[in-house]
Length: 378
Length: 47
Image 1: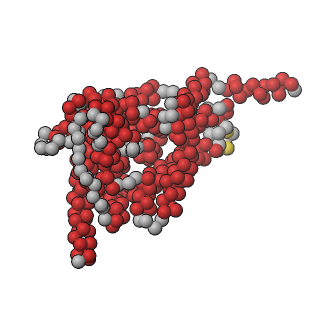
Image 2: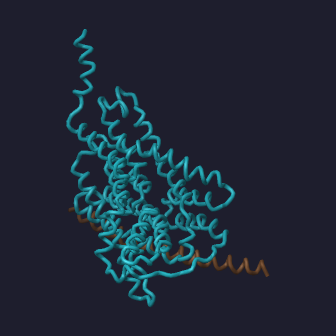
């Protein structure tokens, strides 16, 4: 009897193998990065703890003896149905102020140029042996847009959800480390010291209200499959700009954002089961994700340099690096770099303009990938 | 390497970037046009 009771307490421990312990270590590392290094703590901490929970003995939090665990319920209800990423988009939309972009609409071009890395990475992933759908999910990591990455991975490669999401969010938090060397390598000090002037004018309120509706209509006409993504993003922005839903706007920016981020993080962590995560593919995904980030940054900077060939009044090519979706991190990084070379150089509002266009660009690029890949595979 | 998949990825790159730039171009034109109309309309209203 005592032996049976003793076994009962030890059995759980014996069911674990080195892979589970490895996942505990990875979960611990993510929590450490969140707590000690302050890298995207709102996401990395829940993801790290979710990774630990899902690898506990018997997988009780996922599924045990035919009974669904809480993490599986959350994962299926929030991730596989695409609900959490879309709810996050309402919150993100409510947080974005597009006014700097209205001042300089041409900055929208950077929101396109800085997504070149997605497509280059897709080709590279195919060369490395991933099929086109898997490659598409890996390429989208470069957009620095977590919800879009999850949305596409849910459709194309559920089995890669764990590594892709963790890599996407980890690199997003590393934007201040990844971008500066790329920008420095592609620009001269003289170019980085270019000042950008421009007086901000008042934008009619009707324009700020109509903008989310117009973007939704045009994007959905062009790429119908992107309608949920762009629609929810712009719905959040409409709540913010309409001026009569302040309470809802605040709720979307705070309570909704916090609650869904918490559930999204732990659900993503739940996808990090040892057998799904500890594979060679994960290493490739890490390398390719980094590659996508680097080439997106490079795409934006090189496009700015290309435009400068035709302009009398040159633009600061560092602005191009802000065309990704990491808002407002990319703008801050570029402003900081500008100040380092010239303490009087303020390019923040231009950087923000490119950055918010990157938000729209990443969603449209994601929608294009969603629409085109099945067509190509027919 | 799967050459068919590689070719498909190159087509994806070409079409994807083209449509992305077209979308942004359309947005610039629409946004500027809309703002001009609103400005003219509001001026007319004031006078």
